[in-house]
Structures are given as C-alpha cells and as structure tokens.
Length: 117
Length: 111
Image 1 (cartoon, chains in turn green, blue):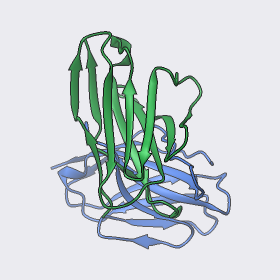
Image 2 (cartoon, chains in turn yellow, green):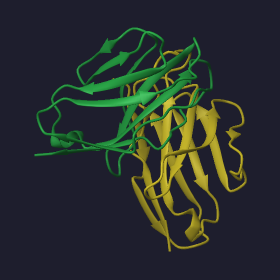
Image 3 (cartoon, rainbow over the protein chains, first blue to last red):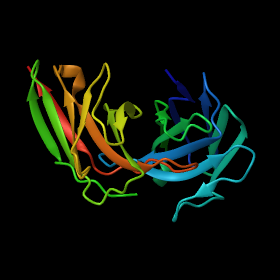
C-alpha cells in the first residue's frame, strides 16, 4: 500500500532554532500534500495544503512566514518551523494522496514530535 | 464538507465485535465516508471508505444506511491492539480537499 515517510520522528532543540521536517511519498507521486499539527489530547488540525510547484495554501490563523512549506517534487514536501519557541512544541503530521486519484484515501506519516526548550 | 457526530468513547471486550457509530445527517450526494484510526503517538491509519454501498476489507466493514445519514464501522474481532481513537470523516473527492478531523471515538479494548 501507499507509504508516507516522515523525518525526523523526534526533535528537541533550543528556542530560536529553525527546524525542517521532511515528508516523502515512497511509492506514489503526490501532487498535493497536507500538513497537520496535533496538541496533546486534541485532534489533528490542518495547517496547510502543499501543492507541487506552487505556493502552499495556509489555514486561517497559521502564519506562513513562521511555517515555511516547500513542495519541490512530486514525492517531497518540507515544513520548516522558523525561529521555534516553546509554544511551537507539538506533533506535526504530514499526509499525501496519489496525484489525480481523488477517490483514494490520504495516507499519513508517523509524525514528528517537536519539543522546543 | 458535512459534519460528523461520534460518541466520545466506547469499550469493547477482546474477541468481540466493535461497532462504532457515526452520524452524518447533512451528507451530500458526492461526499464519501472515510474512517481512520490513530494509535497513541502515531499518524492516522486509513481503515476504509465508501460512498453508498457497504464495504469490507481485511481490517473492517463499513455499513452505510440507505439514506446515507449514518454509518457504522465494524471491527469483527477486536484485539488489544485495536485500542485507538477512531475518526469518521465525510469528504468530497476533489483536488486539494483535505481530511478535516473531529474529536473521534476513543475505543478501549480490554481482556
């Protein structure tokens, strides 16, 4: 089945550091990838939709200059949390759907747990 | 996309069938019903989806009522590893449309 790989799985860093998270579709091409954030005991919240070769679309309340998204190829999207602060500590999860197959499910990575000290 | 309503929690004995209900009374004709689950500290796992016919795969069965206003996910023989949060999501199938997660149902399977 379709596999989405996310790296790293866990990051601990100091306040003010920028952190890059990679999301790869391993066995299919994804024209669209999605980034979610999940706080403890809460549900997943959609942050942005990443489109290959174009600018990402951000959900209301998500700062595009804070969370930089790059979808440079059909198999890779990256999320960079710039100048991270403790309130950015969260579980970040990416998701992808095979290009052009709108009836197919989204597949999710295993998430990145970000802890800012 | 139409909203869904699920009970916040359910319990099930190991080996028994787990029947998880979902209400989506405002669903429209071109919206699919998707089920995902999330085991603690992992990304969501796809289970099954359907439009109007009942569906079955190796993980579960999906029963959709004839009026499509509700559905039930059935795990035929629950195991301890099925303990997770189960999300029922209604979504139109069009480009760029993401899954929007509600609060889901926390299923606890016990021996």
